[in-house]
Length: 404
Image (cartoon, rainbow, N blue to C red):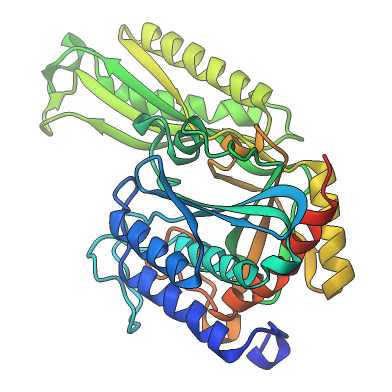
């Protein structure tokens, strides 16, 4: 598909579009890791203040919350944008390349934040039309490991971000490189999978590599473990359901000719249903202990719960998608497959109705096709104005009409 084949009419002024691009490029050039987003938070605050937003607060360290009050009674809607970056060395050769070596906005959070700022600017300027209020939640630490508990969204919920005033419904967007710019994707049911961190420590016995019968080889045990754990999904989970067990790291040994007495395996369990996660975790524990015992080794299994599955509220999603289709046409709003990646938005959407959608950023004619979390990830910046232009009127409409 060529660029001319993609219709991306935002309806925003050239000044508004240029401001969105400037925000995104500044954020992209100055990425910060989870829970370190101090300069990012200050930048967001400065842009909100320049718009004239009066109610701006810090929440949960580097989180920023802005409340825009409408002129008429109505619902309290939340809009969440994550702000942290990833520990990835950028390979893109662009003028706004990351200036923080080894840190990159490789998941599009610079886009999410810029769209959030753009929506805030639109609604701030149209407060006379707004029913209720919109709470903009610029969230840190979406990429944080579950070992850093509580992760970003949970931390903000614990700090009371959904209260005072109580949020009635909450929205978020995510960049999607499998979706062309000019499209918005929705997913019925599960949107993102739940994620659990698996850590297995195998204890064997050292011996000379030439006399392996005198020890217990933790490397051999680990090899059998990795192979056996793959059977959990292929033979232990209903094939009609989505579940993944992956061991991504194996660390063992300190010499080529010595049997390792210890091995550490680290991986993930991903599933859309809690029952599948629980089943897979129980199987991980059982398989690990039984295989280790069979080889004369022992092990410890640690499971750390991460983000929970993101499940859209069906009523809120229907109202949102129907409003988008009615206003902008069905060709822009498309069904999109669920993702086995994980997202901590569920910390919000398990408390109040949530609607999580995908924002198209792909343009194959320009080589903008690379996956999230890769060093050459990039976006078609027309997605910025498109996202703002589509969702500002929807927030105005649902502020007036939304009732759970």
